[in-house]
Image (cartoon, rainbow, N blue to C red; front, top):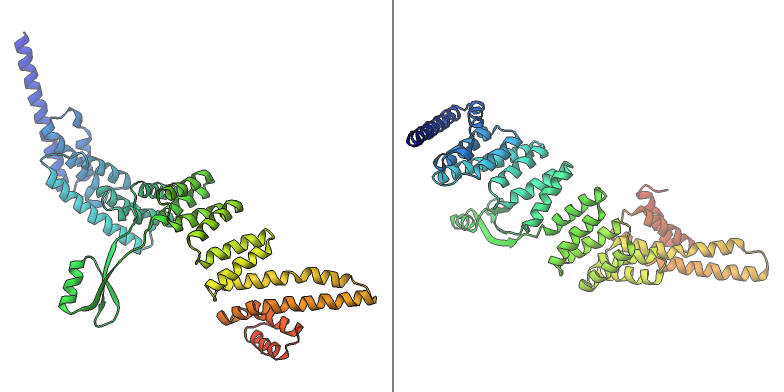
Length: 414
C-alpha cells in the first residue's frame, strides 16, 4: 500500500507540473497576440507559491508582461507589474532587464508627452513609474514630486518628496556645454565625450562644464510647506530641523527655517535665527533688511535704522530698505503735527510752534536722500515721487519741486 501511494503521489506531481507548464505556455501565447486580458485570467488561476522553482521565474515574468500590457495598463496594474518583475530571478534575468528598459522608455516618453500637454498629474505618475522600474534614476522621482505638487496633489507629492529626502537626493550634477559656432547659443550635452566630439567636429566652440545647484533646500521647503498647509506645524519644523542637523553650515536651510518661524508667527525665533544667519553671512543685505523690519515692528527705531543703513551700504540699489527708512523717518512727523495742532495763540505757543516746524523740516530733509536714491534706482516709483514733491514744497526747494511735479505728472499722478 505504501509503495502504491508513493507512486500515485509522484504521478500527481508530474501531472500538476505538466498543467502548470501548459498554462504558462497558454499565457505566453496570449501575450504574444497582445491578448493581455486573457493572459491575466490564466495567470490568476495559478499560485506561484505552489510552483516548482524552475517555473516561478517564468510566472512572475509573464505576469509582469500581462499586467504592463505593452504600456496600456492603469497605474494600479503598473504597480503590480513592477512588483512581479522584481521577483524574477535566475534564467530570465536578460529578458527581465529588456522588459525594464522598454518600460522605462515608455514611461518617460509618456511622462514627457503628458507634461507637454499640461497633464501634470499623468506626467507625475509616469515619472514615478519610471523611477520604480529603475530606482537608481532618482531624477525621475524628483520630476514626479514637483509635477504632483504643481497640480496640488499634495498628499502624493509629500510621499514622493519624503522619499527623495530619505535617499539623500540633491540633484547636483555636472553639466557639459559649448557654444554653437553658427548661432552663438549655448548648447548642453549629455556627456563630456559627446561634447568633446562636437568640439572636435567644429560645430561648437568654447567648451566648459559647471556643477548645478543642490535641490536639497527646495525639497525640504516643499515638505515643510505641505505639512504647514495641513496644519501640522511641528512636522514642518522637524523637516527643516532634521535637514539642518545634517547640514549645519548650510545657510539657505537656516534662512528657510527662520522664514518658516516667521510664517508661523514666531517673530522672536525668526529674529534669533536671522542674527545667526547674519553672523554667517554679514554681507547679505536681505538679512540686514529683515532684521530692520523686525526691529521697526518692535518699536526699536534706532536698531532698525542701523540695519536698514547696513542693507543700503551693502546694496545701494536696495529700494525696499530705502523706502522703509524714509517711511520710518517720516513717521516721526505725526507726533509733531499733533502737538502743533493743539497749541494755542500765546507767545510761548507760537515759539513752540516754530520749534516744532523746524524739527519737522529736519525730518523731511533726513528722508530726502533715501527717496532720491529710490527714484534713481526705480524712476517709476510714483509714491516716492509724490512724497518727494511734497517734501520739496514743504522745505521751500522750488526748483526740485517743479522738476518732481513734472515727473509725477509723467507717471500719471496729479
